[in-house]
Length: 343
Image (cartoon, rainbow, N blue to C red; front, top):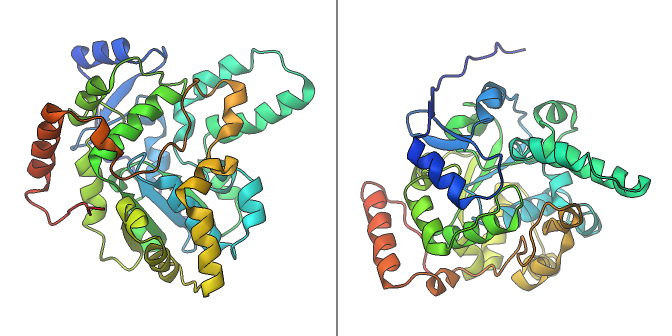
């Protein structure tokens, strides 16, 4: 067993101004954040208790990680990689929620208090058993569960690479999915209005300023992307853009298939493209986390998979926000060759 490495980064409390802003805009009472490391990633305060476990997570050579900033096409990438690595087993994919097939490394930090609240409720035996399974997936630390999982393991995380095991990319295949930050912001805004553990109360313009000023979860956004972009030529790293799925789905599927060592014939490709299409994806309960709705994880009027479009952000950005966003993007990309594809 390798020696455990002490956690190398410092933690810093957020300012009183930031705390007041969070309290005003997020109605769920248990949100507390902290900044981590020299880049100041904004993480759940509970991260401090688990950071060393994440940093020392044992990695297996046949693991497959999907890493992203949230709402960048993560679920699409998870479903595609899982199907490719499991002989296109659509029966399991359609019947077993992706959260059970693809553990989400840090999700439990957001649900520890929610779990305690839910366990106080009265349910019949069958419903209570179903709730317990859901809570195990959403609110219990996965590090121990991962140790007991058979290989190959499929693992999802929204943490940046610098907060994960340093040997991750050298040891296991890692797919990083990125997306235009304007689209990410719009999707994250709806995501924050969907989940009860966030319950965002503001308008999109307020959300945009949180996101842009690195006051939303796991920002700064561009530092997250740049860490992965620097490793894009590593043989164990595949760097994808969500816009590539929209532009040429078959070509993108072939890239992912080649990366994981799989080949598809024309019939298999046609069925996989149909399964991965936005219209079918939106109707697929296995990837929409709809099993969470009946237990109050979701707030009404929002869904997990929304429109899946690459340019829907244009409906949210007026001229002022568009100029602000473009300046912000240009400033953050001026010292890198990272560019977002146009569709």
